[in-house]
Amino acid sequence: MTQLLPPVVLLTCGDPAGIGPEVAALAWAATAAHARARLRLVADPALIAATLATRRSMPAVRITTVSATDPRPSTAAELLVVAPANLTAEAVVPGVATAAGGRQAAAAVTTALTLVRGGTAQAIVTGPLHKAALHAAGHEVPGHTELLARGCGLPDDAASMMLWLPATNGPDGLGVVHATLHQSLRSAVADLSTERIAAAGQRLAALLTALLHRPPRIAVAALNPHGGEGGLFGDEEPRLIRPAVERLAAAGLTISGPLPADTLFLRASRGAFDGVVALYHDQGHIPVKLLGMHRAVNITLGLPLVRTSVAHGTAFDIVGQGCADPTSMLSAIDAAVRLVAAGWCG
Image (cartoon, rainbow, N blue to C red; front, side, top):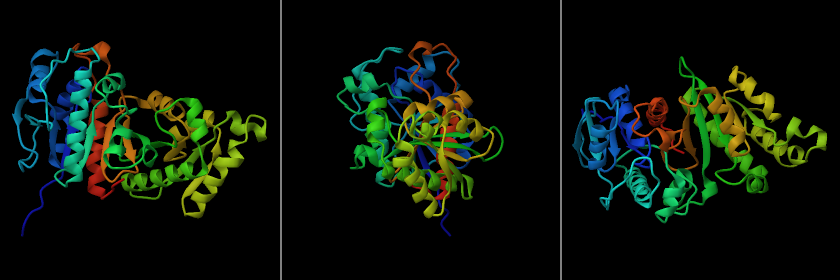
């Protein structure tokens, strides 16, 4: 009988001038996921070698350049690097946003996307991008979510951004999905619709079912203070949000809302809900990062692939100082492997 090989999970560093290469190397040396998946780092091998040689507190691992189809297992002691397609060797200054860094970051992501869509790999775990560097390189996208959506031939709003905060003990946690993406608050409110809120709730429910192996309890946040105070502070709750909640309830979800956001996240943090539908970026990001920024994972919903990411930025100000924290990358790797094992895809 032929034994199936473990799934291939691809890591990227994000912007190579930031802490992405550091957290990728640190997580590689510490993760227990090597026993459940074959990890590969999509990056410039020379840059990874320089990172290990010149940045402080790096793990003692050897680097081996491999092809994307190399079947060997991964181990903590040997960092397996796949060079991005059409890689152009360019100098990158640590801690400085440049077009060169944006090009290398985009090349790694697009290579990983091609490999997953072609069936060579089963998931992508991404490091942090720097949006200005990405734009300087000619990629006019707000971030990973939209870059991946367009790479799949889909519009930006086909994808939802979710933050997953694993519990400190056990398999549970809190998932927060966003009904809008990276955009101004004014445009996010203008783009809200019953359809977008309901779609985000459905995607969140599917993801949490895969992670928790049970039907999740979900709440939908209100947009306005005090849930609109009966219309005194706005009409979005009865006009847009409540119809979405009713639609999700009719689909069989255990759903509550719209609930005032200032108390909703406190209740969720104490276990009242497994997931929350937030209506704009900061409504969901601020409470999750307060609760556990370095444990949090960004997961893209709505795409035909598994993609998780760190929930922090490039942190140019601490590059090379030996204080980069790989916890979010470790959580992102674990979440990706769990989702692949559960058969979840988008």
